[in-house]
Length: 279
Ligand SMILES: [Fe+2]
Ligand SMILES: [Fe+2]
Image 1 (tube, rainbow, N blue to C red):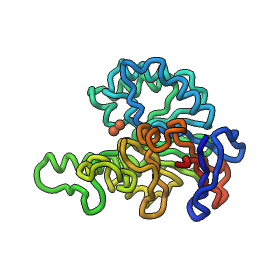
Image 2 (image 1 turned 180 degrees about the horizontal axis):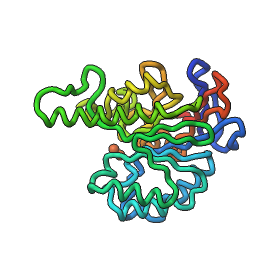
Image 3 (image 1 turned 30 degrees about the horizontal axis):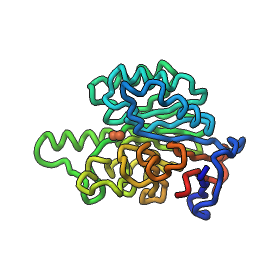
């Protein structure tokens, strides 16, 4: 299987590894994917995929747009597909999970099968801290929408600020030496490159990057930008991975559409590693 392991942040960029390499006693391995978009016809179609991911990793990270319309029916199907997964599953919701106005139904179905759904909270998996939030839109850098003018614009910007504050609050709770941020929207422009530039402002917000500068993490995972770029970095060098399933499928057609990433169980420096693919 064409996977590679990279040594971050200042080591050699990429060296080969294998999908079939066993889980390591010295590392915690995560399988991350977003934008599964379960619909009413998905029953029975994802069990093998989740089983493969669970076999390859110590935990699954799901980066939102878990369902297509956020209906209770879709959520039930997703929960049934996940029910047999024997490793911890941590998720954030995406915008699609809100479409029917009942995100709580999606959360409830997932919680019933043991999924930890984060919305401004943090959890810990085998000593690795995970802070999760959906995030929001608003644009990047100088293109960020400002809270100025009509009340509707101010409300829109306030939503992005609220999500950023929730991320900061979750990050502040973590005491683990290794930390991951889990999002749906992107905190940087780098991983939405490839999408039409006209829709960049709807794919994420630099406001989500600000907490990541104050509370550094080892890696950030997000989805939402189905035609974006697999990897880029925050301005302080933290790797950001867009693990939207359609992007993984398109960029690595021979690999299963989840992204493997591992962190050392100890707090030793310069051993941070990830397992993306070779092209
Ligand atoms: Fe999506
Ligand atoms: Fe989305």
